[in-house]
Image (cartoon, rainbow, N blue to C red; front, top):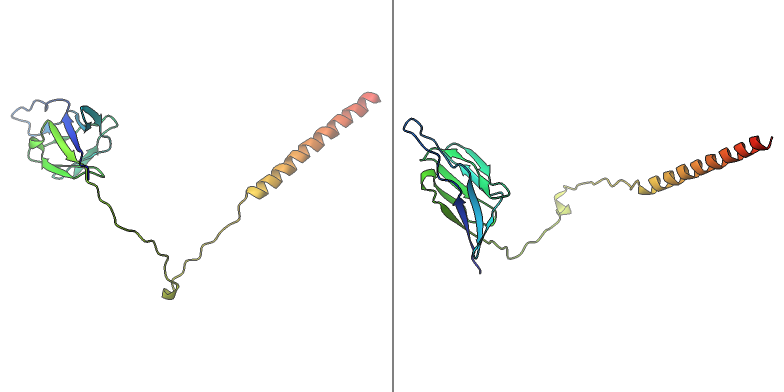
Length: 160
């Protein structure tokens, strides 16, 4: 089983925090996938502030913005990767997310048994395609007939 590691990186340092202000801003952090020496952005990573019950997702370029208190617990999650939880102040400049592969041995889909007495009736309506083709044929025939009739009428008027 191959395990790949993915990185979450910070684009900017935290915003300046004066003594009167307790919240810190990520000022656009970035989640990237590290394949060898190349860092590819990881879009749609869920970045959730568990403490404040607020969250965001990363953009197509892997960036996101989040404002939180230093003691807030932040969770990073993405399908196919292990969930990472840590305090906002402890989020390092580069956070590694590890791929998590789950396989099912076998899946069997079974229709409901008729012995239970619960059946579902499904109404199947016929396709309207044949009706539309017939209607289209009639419309075309009518237009052609009227066109020929108009030409014949004009020719008869010219002859008189």
